[in-house]
Image 1 (cartoon, helix red, strand yellow):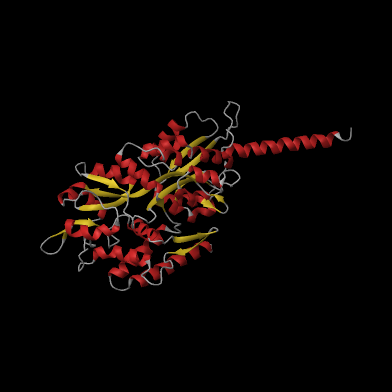
Image 2: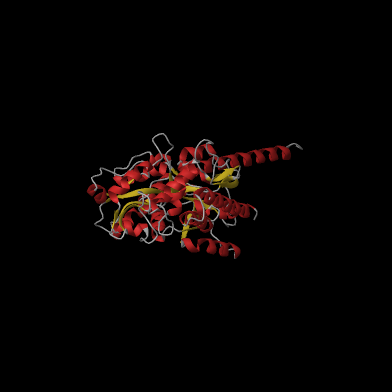
Length: 440
């Protein structure tokens, strides 16, 4: 008889351990989560993001109509106010349970995010499920967000301008640009540019200039920001071959060549309109923009005869790469419903929801099983290809790094600095921002 309490405790402990293991297996996708009417109901969770409310409401209603385990309340926030509203809400104890964050807002919000452990979702399963850029969300402490959507940079090109120049198609490699300038760029009697090949060389009137420079830098081998065991450091300037110019310097020099009026490559200056507006007006042959801009360009000028292509590369043997803005769903560490947030986050990264948001926003999916199915729409096929080669870097402060890039280009164009000097200053400035962030 004295042994009965001990046996009871052993049995009870065993049952608890089994239930705990089953719970982890369920969340990791190894076992299906319960689906009967008697299942756990996690209640309501609040999700913040910058996706239009109507879009998210339609997504949740259509893709999760049969979901009974958790209810998602979505709140739209303007991108420019998101950080301020997020901090204020957390301070007052009224913050959301989850947030949709782009990769350039991730670092500044890491201390507000509850990582998902690698026991809950295996790193191997994550890599098998999502495109490579999604691995930005893998940190030593866990998975800080699950990929939700991706918006890659692509090259829009004016078909009429190329046809009138007797050119069959858009360039595939950067080296082709030099030969294209005299065939496409048109100047008036005073030397002013009336039609341009490309908006390279300046910064202030170049839409997506930071993304453009990021593409050239990363294609040249620069990670911009290095990440080692979760620690971040500036990687703008990398060690290059000793017997030739550093590829990073060459890439930045290539960009600035197109704003030099004494060069045959001259095709852009700061007196011209914003590059996006000039392309929409039909006076710019090539424009580098996000895939999400496609519908807007069509709406603003229905008569514009344009197409889309993958961003040019360094060469046939180089690793293909473009810039992509990737968004992930993250669990807020101060959220009141952590279990519900985990359930909702895994649902939002599922194939049904990812398919839904991709169709609603005309963007490529972030899941490998979905992106491997080629779309019949010609523009979408380019977006899919671009998503597969999309990359980005850990941006500690988008506003500050934008200023660093702008000052780098301005200092070279004004003659204040050589390209080597400007890159060194930019590298040092980026390093300081990263040190300040990690010292907080």
